Length: 306
Image (cartoon, rainbow, N blue to C red; front, side, top):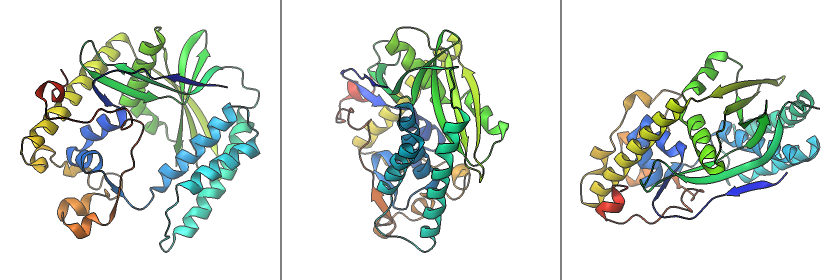
């Protein structure tokens, strides 16, 4: 199955839903990550494993055997490992690799012969202007486009530590799903009905579940307005920083997030910002949004996103 390359050139500011979502969650965390380019120097194992599983699933969608898909996933996992290991990490790595080796063959067996969804392409990507004449562009990547019940859908793979339907409720309003539907609908020039969340549960005996989520026209209009508002707010604050204002005032903390999902990796840095604390972080590698983003200049027109 071929990859769909839908990215088109253009001027403006580029954002993906992850950046907007992080900014909404905590302005300071956004600033540490995307303006100071500081990321934890230790892997976040659920993310590393999830990325590896996604690589294996993409291989399966492309016609690979389960065994070859496992090899692809393991290679991806190993490429994300740090050069130095801390005590206890070897055990974590062994557990995660065993989970990958169980998960992908079980997934292939679970959905063997599945003809409900007709796949169109894997890892489709796009760049679309949000709204009209805003100079604000949404960059997105999709796991898979499919046809179900004669309608276009996005299939999005998710890994989770448990199967709890309450955890799926967040996707009813989640900005990621709205961004995917909005972006794909604009690029393809036809409505995308929604997202099929393809859940892989990382239990000892893997579990699988699929759930459908859609967005109404009103939902997508709301997404559009909110996305534009948040990006303009970020750009305005970045411009004020360039004019000499204190970035830590403009990108303030939301302390309710410090211990929301375990300890925030930036918490100690928020408490004591000094060279020694900053040495505990790695430099963030450019991602697919950075590759398309124009260099930020101190120009009010550009900074205010038009």
